[in-house]
Length: 171
Image 1 (cartoon, one colour):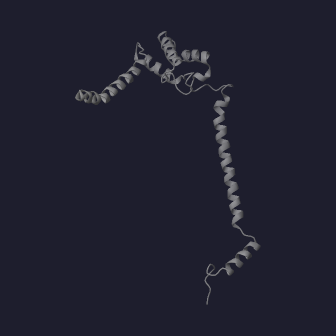
Image 2 (cartoon, helix red, strand yellow):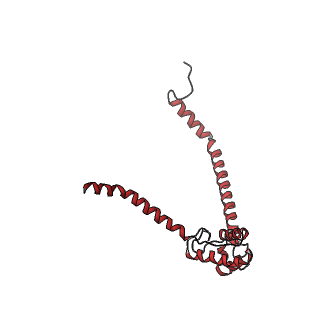
Image 3 (cartoon, helix red, strand yellow):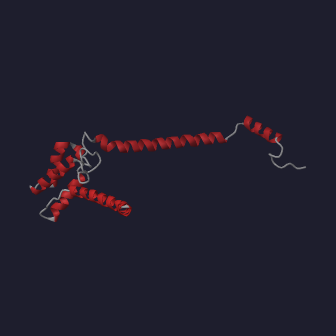
């Protein structure tokens, strides 16, 4: 009986590994298989799903997202492709439904003005601030390097008082 217990305990790691592999393989079935009449349509599907952003996932496209809404959007893109809609019609439909947010590269308009111009403005402000700070430090170091007449006299007096720290004296 002790021998049988040892055999069962030795097979636990193998059993655990097989359970993990089985559970990991279940995730593979979540990918929806779409059929396309030709390679061009498949390429258009892939291009559109990589260009459209998932409304729930914020910074993930609908091709990579596992959110239910991303699955619905992939299904919708596939349906519209099968109906013969072109890419512009599909993107227009998605924008009409979800707004410009659904596109990774929204068009330049009054609503997206800040989105397109703010990074440039912030970069220019950062460069201007860095230049201003650099000039300020440079002028401070130049001013600090020069000693007034009174300070030079005090320095000379201190150097004369401390033995061995001044220039070599002739004996």
